[in-house]
Image 1: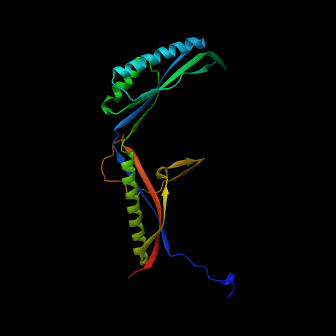
Image 2 (image 1 turned 90 degrees about the vertical axis):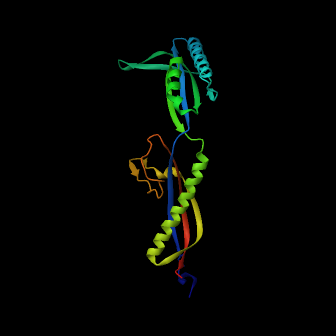
Image 3 (image 1 turned 60 degrees about the vertical axis):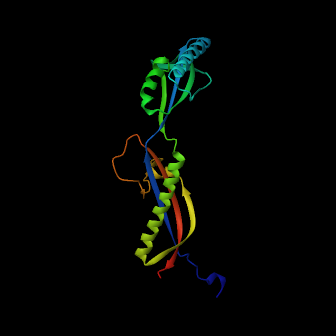
Length: 221
């Protein structure tokens, strides 16, 4: 038999996808705000923005917030569309602040205080967890367990047994959420482990993990 006539050997394996999503309470918030001032002259915009930024800094110190940072002042031209044309209205100076809050019950009051102090641009409020690494490790372990359970289910139905692991491929957790690609929406793969059932806190943080695993297929003993 020539080389071209050799039968193709098909690997006896099963490839499965395992995933898990944990929903955990946030214990930290990141507030991104800015002070912006628009004036006809750049020097006036700079001066007013720095004055407002100083007021915000003073407020943060009085509020006992130590974990915050501010950006350098930036300048841009501002226009307003009116009667079919863009009209120049002045120069805008902007100084941004990133504030980390670890006492969650103070977030509302702190936002109000920042605005009252002169921060007139609320960019974002992001809730986070300081235990992300711990939760990610738990989610990855759950994903591997879910993959093994799925492989055992398929193999049992096919009358074979799950063997040793051939390959393990980490999958980006973002694949666990649907996404738009052009005009096509791709459905996310089903999540195998979503933690304990129960009411979900709307403000909970989703920590996910996913994995593709290939197992050898063995004959049943």
